[in-house]
Image 1 (spheres, rainbow, N blue to C red):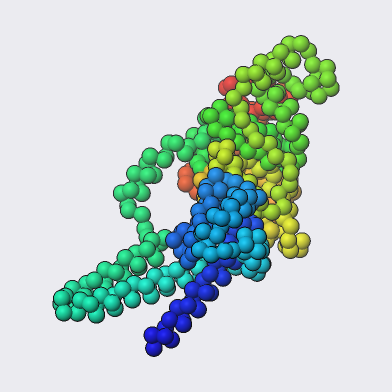
Image 2 (cartoon, rainbow, N blue to C red):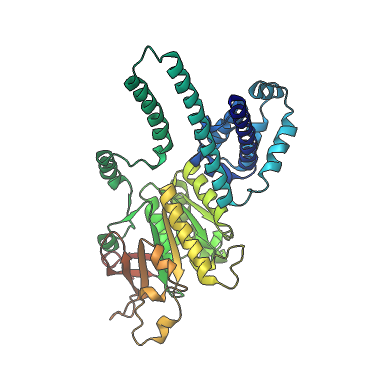
Length: 448
């Protein structure tokens, strides 16, 4: 019987090594796989020191937000001598890695399948641990059968398996209530990000990290302009912002920033006919600015790549706010051609998960459907969000922009309707919009 058990253990170990090689192959080729592996696995789960050491290197790279090519380079930088010592035998590094890559083919690019593979590896570790501890207990019973009474032996057995069980369920253990309460009250203020408009912040009580905020408006109402104003207001709070724009290029965005910050219309600058006074104001702004907005104009086609980009920005640049202009201009590569609603569900659901996991604020703009113009009462409502459903469902806050009526024809007023606020109240406020500067201001602070 012992020989039979030994054969089973040897087979389990052999299977585990092959399983680990497949995981190693995946995390050295794909950054998403590396990030997922670091979330689920522990270095102690691996059977041989070579795999443990590789996983340590990968984890260090992931914690630094490094890309897949750097992860691969960090591992292959190990010398042949180090490789052999870690493997406890003469192993050709290139051949070994090629074997790992070949074993990773079935899971590479399929995160659901790979996550199952990681959980299986974790389970294999605990099976081996239970077998190992069972052997120790059996040996202990034989050796101490006369020295210890039965109650002591039973207690030893219970304690041993309780420790293993505690390790196994540690991922699901609830946090201590008092510790959680203290953590929340200490984070409350530090995670608060103001929009920069007191009348709006009075309603929403500021933005918070981990939130998905949707700002909806019809064409030409000013949602893109508002996004840039909010980005600058957040910079004033010493926070870094990343702005994805699919309608404007970097030059157009910078012209709007110049106009908002200097108070000069950027049209002469675009024509190359700016005055000396205007030029000096621009230079003064550029020389003294603390604004830090990372601008991206490349379209999002892969949510996995977008997640990794956001993660890297959070780790390496400490970016805490992501602004996307706008939702309906995102088209994913994949089988969504005939189901736009399903595609948007995937996008908004992923944005929500990214905000929560990375503890960042994501603000995405959204187009309103044309139905709003067909109604007698044209004040926008939640159902006017184009291809809505998941948009309003996943968002923590939804703010709808509406051209407000004004008795003064020189005033351009925009009503901000907080149509949804998951953790607070709803309501509306009105801001002035200075279109020549693409600038929003409180009504009492702007003379048009």
